[in-house]
Length: 146
Image (cartoon, rainbow, N blue to C red; front, side, top):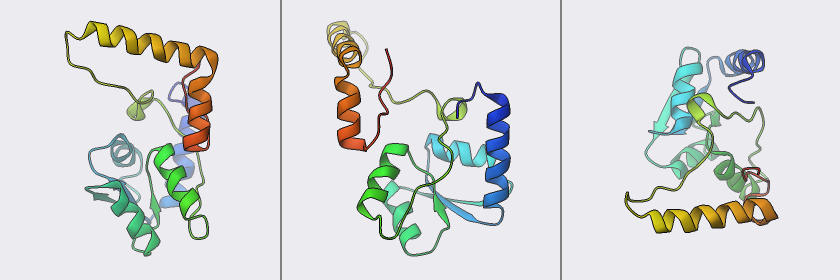
């Protein structure tokens, strides 16, 4: 679900509001997921923030919260490790307060490293290496497309 699909986004948010009304959702503080929950579900659900992601999953496993919102890759890794107790469901969102993906930060003035890094990433995207690594390590293709 992307932010440029206004009708789809509104329906998805309305569905989530209905589903999570009166529920408690765990999320790591100061993340894009926390921003999303406050913006769209803060009026219907209790949003409980944690200093670290593993704490959100611990409270989910121990029944202290009803759900966790985390990055897709973190959530998938946790579900894979605890498939007997936890499942993943629902919409996948991108855009808006969730942004367009992850990034790498570099110190200003390091144009040589930036150029080499950009060339390497472009090459990996074009030849499919980044997608293959994504599937290997995250269980799905979350790599950008050429």
